Length: 162
Image (tube, rainbow, N blue to C red; front, top):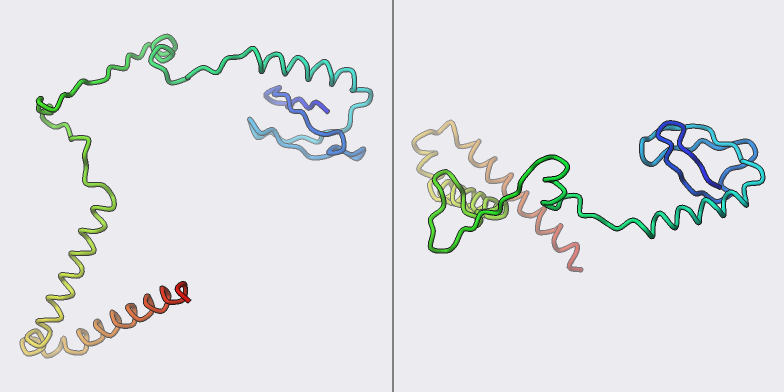
């Protein structure tokens, strides 16, 4: 069965058994419009002709690169110029090089930073407690929480190893 969207007129081919006599709520995959479709009688001849036309159109259309420089220039008047940077030339001021630090680089640096802070805090916790006796409970609770997180992560990883 050939369906036409009531809004954008896009055509869809669906099996005849998909639409019952009581009708079926369908939705256009292109514009999202919804309507109730009822079966159409005597559509075999029309369906065959329409399928042939659709197949001809599909076979005749060549796939165009919508983002090619020629298309962008013709359609929107844009020109794409690729900069030619050689290894001997310096980048213009304010331009970043193509080799950046990246997301995972920042994650690794952040992990190393927190590990260093925890290490320094662990080494100096006795000195901090002597200097600030009120902070003793907070420091011990903090390290207890870190130990619980470490145990939880270890058990989580071991769960997949077994």
